[in-house]
Length: 99
Image 1 (cartoon, rainbow, N blue to C red):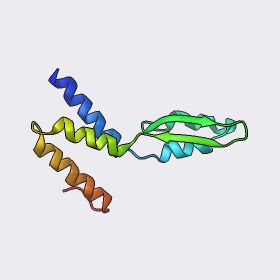
Image 2: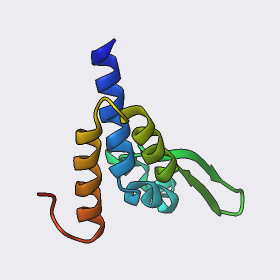
Image 3: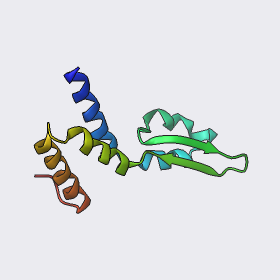
Image 4: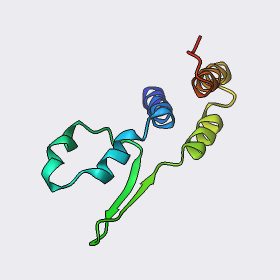
């Protein structure tokens, strides 16, 4: 059970940190360039729709909600780990490398 919890927490951390670049690239792929689809990381993508007129609707995971849930799940038992995670997150947001 503990291994499963750890695995899920790590997966949530990756989800909170993932980039959305590939989801945006997906919106610009056409039938001729679908070969590039296999190499895309679509982890943050929750919904994708393309209209008949060529418009796209892309919905992504709510990173703030994921971070809040991570805080709730790690409160008490892993406060130190959560603090380190958020310090690293803030460092990346400011353009600094994590310590």
